[in-house]
Length: 325
Length: 305
Ligand code: SF4
Image 1 (cartoon, rainbow over the protein chains, first blue to last red):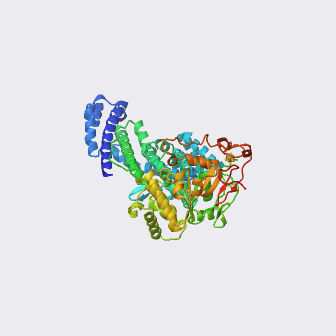
Image 2 (tube, chains in turn orange, brown):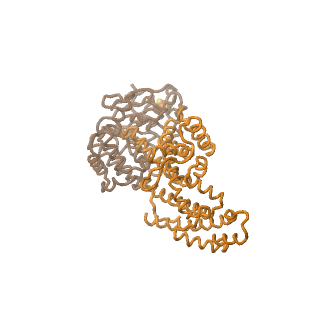
Image 3 (cartoon, each protein chain N blue to C red):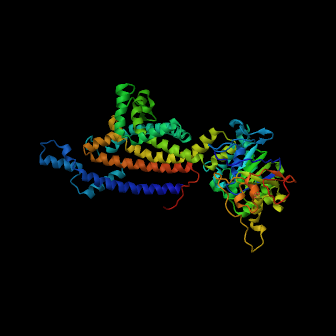
């Protein structure tokens, strides 16, 4: 296990390094940010002064080297726009995105597993069919459209829930989160549901397929032959088996929920990382873009590692061994 | 509607080992699951009675049936690789079997599990209880399944080809142990198999099934020495050890008919050498002495009354 984790950490470092190179070159290729800093009547001298302070006059490899040097010290450069460390900007926004992602995941699990299991046990019932039809919609409707509809219905027409922004926050373990206040929870509901819809459909499908497959297994029949109640067979024997694929898939999806909360955050004006990256792209704020991408990659790496460890806990057949490819 | 099993009638008493023999598809497994009340829907028991200690199990409410299952009537399955839940420890799977029926502490349940594993010859049970099924060999897993079936000291165990998936040495050991355990505890055993040689070394009495019906029943010695039904006769002829070296095995010609398309009259008619016009009406069951019964108009032994 330890060997496994060490090996993974080394691999992760290599991935991060390669990623930083690609991102750096890619962003360099997009365009020149200098124009943003200059008013229209700036003269050549002023222009050169700005270029020099931003370090844009040096060759690419040197800029990259300076960047790596800084990165090793935890400094990913200052935002051109906000003139503050890019990493700090991102970390400030991170709790908002994290809580949105976690709320979305929680919704997907809390509703997805029971609905999917029901659909698996009663595939031909009206409700079972209804659940599956709903999950198809959840897969195929575009996020931005669903988001707008949610705002129209629940915020504009019914007036039940606020349409935009993050509610009141409270500190939990030093992190300001809106999940701790009533006002915050009310605000998070719509965007979280919007973000959860796709994952919810995914969980429903996984749970349903899992139940249908596992109920036919001999171990279920043997468990029943032991005289266990149907409840124990379903909620211990079957549930534990179907959780394995669900945890794996959801864990891997958590990264994408965080990374792609961009659309939901934009629609609901949620002050998270997604909104920050969109603004930064609009302003060609290079350091923030690079820092955001690197933070996202790091998140993916950490999540994958956690999922692997979790997987080995859930499924005793999986050993995190020091095996090659 | 498809009748997988029809007109099946047999009894088994305490301490007795009954062999239920037939080719695959003859309905022997369905018979086993019917007794357990575990026929998968849409399948169901359309009629008849299953008397267990004088109580009819057919139509018993699920809750009462559940209380019998695993406690009074236990079952061992064919494939030991599939019967244990892969993600639960042996401990969990055995303890839950105890606690489903007896209101005992976790420690007491664990003690019973340890004891049961010891009885089926699993060394160092304490260590084994903590393990997961994939850490065991097939033979070991089947022992665990048998220990689980034995754990509540049932009155009847139904064993559905439990040694077929194992290699011959292990098969012999398990047969011997199961026989010993049934003797010691007075548990009745129904051993379902396609293999007559297993029955020969294990059972007291035999029921031979063909196409969903019992065609012959009697003591194991009588049936193996002097089979009355032509099908039984054919089965015995196809057991390798009973033939002289060098002579080809006597195969029963043809294949078992599909249950969807049974011939009228005796189901064995298309494959039977003794068939004639009289076999076109379904034969009834005849007593031929010695507690033997046969469903055939031209039995090889004894004349129908
Ligand atoms: S009843 Fe006739 S066909 Fe059937 S087994 Fe007996 S002899 Fe053969």
